[in-house]
Length: 196
Image (cartoon, rainbow, N blue to C red; front, side, top):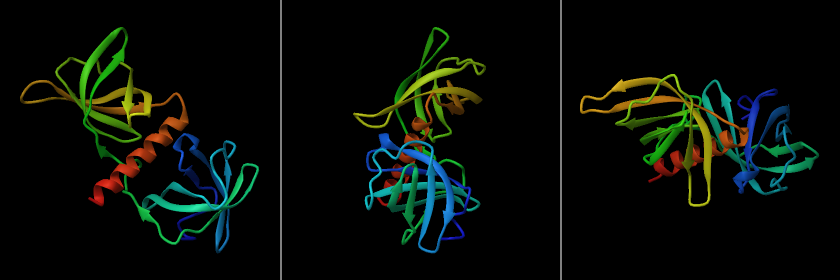
């Protein structure tokens, strides 16, 4: 584990209440622990309560569960986990996500059917002519209680043989916590799908 958790690496911390997701930098690595300097106060992170951790490595996105041994201000000392897994090599986990949604921008609204999403962007189908130069807002429902609102910029458009278009593009966020929420949502759904 020590060769995977490296000093100066960025890491995302997600407690059981993912509205309290946080991120920081690994500032120290010891044989049994590593220390994170968080960007925000550690609200929702408690000693000996398990959290989820996500970080990018040369092998892909590293995911594991562990707990805080000590919390001193914005510094938390984390116990090295017993096991870990790599979610996939791409930067963000992509999952199947089929919803009928509205893509809004410049006084126009397009009806779309999403195909898949990641924290980096999405792919969708539509019968409407979407301006590829536009920037759009979209609300992504994750559960009955939770949704993420972000901006979508189209990157690629393909005309479908049976009519309509398939577009893919990237997300921009008003708030970094929305990106972390979507990272966690996609990672959890990916694990659930694999375990079915």
